[in-house]
Each structure stands twice: as structure tokens, then as C-alpha cells.
Image 1 (cartoon, rainbow, N blue to C red):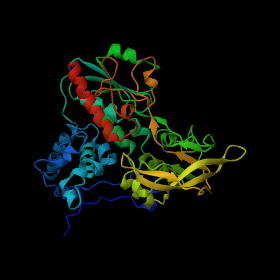
Image 2: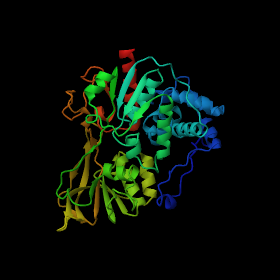
Image 3: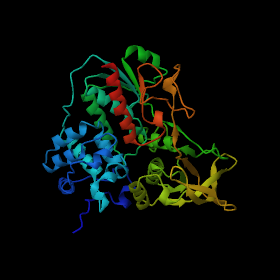
Image 4: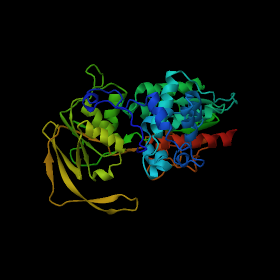
Length: 452
């Protein structure tokens, strides 16, 4: 028999497209044990090298096999502050699983599914990490409660630091709360991850806009160090004609209204004005989240992407789920104009066909316009999912160094300001959850070295 990985159950596409419940149902105990038994327990585990936060993967898998979930959770918690999140949204196929020796001749171990299993079991059984030192009298402020901020806070709290997180929104979690739909990352999971940090002693202050309610300079005066994990929340647009029409949205706005504000509900104070046919422009995970959310709200939902399916930056699993749910992929096409009526409402979109060229320096194939291929597609709603830029409201009245792209300039994770560190999307531009976590963890380690 082939040594194939264990595939967990998922909701039927015909059912899940009518709800926002989690698509993947997670491993049962039997499935987790069977998948764990496939691990070779390599003496020099390549999978650990592929993990941005360096989880000792063979050790927690060995604990699963011993049916010691509490120990497995402790092993993961030594390196990660958000195991239930990582098990769901990290691109393991490009990281730890890509390095798994089993994947050279067959299926890699489903490390992400096993991590999720451990975290979910830990929360169901109210396990609490014991990795915590006595308070050392040092205080650190963390600005932003996204994956970078939460990871930095958790890493510091485990070492005895008194940590306070300042969050501008009314819920903690950052992009985990407002940017990722329930069907991929349930809010109850994010809340449990946040609660686990609070149990470590992390204080979280919501509805506090740093830069307005309190300045960065004031935080510098009050705390021994400050970490900026403010993310990248300003959406990008194309600058094409008609982009200011009624019915043009950013993916950020759509997802925030749905995930954080319940804007799809008729009773909402900030309702989303839905159309009948929507085109989501882009091919990343955010585009998939937006288009799949809108499909669940009853729209004829399309992805418009200027390259081919092979170049889609979204996770392969998310693309497959989208296809199963009836999302239409209009590939090798790019919008050139949004067509509006006399009331500035969308009546259609002008689109041009694209031709793939040679790979560029980054390994992506170039694209050029096919002359004379312009055509009109019918739609009454357009969503731009083209990436994001940093929002530096928190940096008001500070002279922190920024790059030409508006990113915070750091050396390692130290900014140009005394005892101020930064990491995540505010430094790198929009990236993955796990890379933001890696930055938060490394910044915390630098803070410890600097102020201990």
C-alpha cells in the first residue's frame, strides 16, 4: 500500500457555500494518530529548518503518538504563540512540509493538520502553557494586536516581561480578526489564542488609537521598549477610469465589514451594498477570501487575474476550495476601465486579454497586453484585492525613518528611534501570518537582549 497522507474531512461544497462555518473539520484522534505514525522522526529534521518560528515538529508529533496532547502542546508553545491559527492558515506546503523528507518520494507529513489537532485538543481540555517566568520588572508596549504583535507579546510574557498591547479596533487579533473569514479561521479560535496570552499576563487595551489617544513618544517615556506591529492596512487600487464608482470596494473593506462588523446582515449599521455579479481583481489569499465570502452571500462571483492558474499566488488548497464552491476563474485578463451609468453605478467592465512572457528576476512570468482584445463583461460590483500598504497613523509626530515605499526602516528589528522595534507587514509589506509571527518573535528576542 502507498504511504499516503491522511486527508481530513471537509464540509460538502454545496452545503458550505451557504454558510460561514469552517470548511475543514480537522483530524479525529484516529486520523491524527495514523498521520503521526508516518513521521520518520529524523535525527536532523529538515521540517524544523522550514518552520519560521522553529517549532520542534518531530517532538510534538512523537507526543501525539504517545497520546500526550498536553506535552505536544507544551512543545509547540515553546516556539509559537498562535498554534491554532498557524495550523489553519500558514502555507505549510511552502515551509515545513516542503522540507519534509517524506515529500521527496511521496506525501509530506501533514504538519499543519497535526498542529491544529493539538491546539484544538488543548483548548477543548483547557490546557494552559506552564512556560512562564516570574516578573522581572521590565515593561514593553506592543502597538497592534495582529500576528506580529501577539507573537512578540507572548514571547516576552513567557520571559517575565510586563507587556501591554495597544489595539485601535474594538477586538484584538488584527488581520486574524478582520481579514480572514470564519470559514477559514473561526473567530472563536482567535479569541482563544488571545485569551491564552492574557493568561500569561499580557494586558490588551482595545479602542486605543496610538498616534491620537497616546503618542509613540509617550509610550517611549513610559515603557522600557516599544514594538510596532501595525501591519499594512491601506488597500491598493489600479488607478483606472471608473474606479470611484458606486460598487467598487477594496477587499479589506469587504472582509472587515463581513468579519468584524457583520455588514452582510440586514440589521447592520454599516451594511455592504451587494450587487448580483462581482469580479474580484487579484489572485492571492485575500482575493480568495473575498470572492468566497461574496459567493456565500449569494453573488455570481468571479476571480479576474492577469496571469494563468499556475501563477496564482494563493494557496493551492484555497484555489481548489474556491473552484469546488462554484467560483469562476477568468484568467489571463486584466481590467482597463469600469463602466458606469449617469448615477455612477457600475454597468460593466472593460477587460483586455494578457499574454504570458518569460520569467523575470523574481521567477514570475511577465505579462503583456494582447492588442485589440478589449471586451466588455457585465457586472455591478468590483472588488480590488491587489495588496496593501502600511498605515502609519500610529507614527504621527514621530521622526521614525521610513523607506521610499513607506515601510519602517529597521536594522534587524530595531528602528531609528531609541528602544523602538518593528516587524511584520509594516516593515516588509504585505506577507503571510507566519512571517509576521517570525518577525514578532525575533524582535522580542532582540528586546530581551537590549533591556534585560
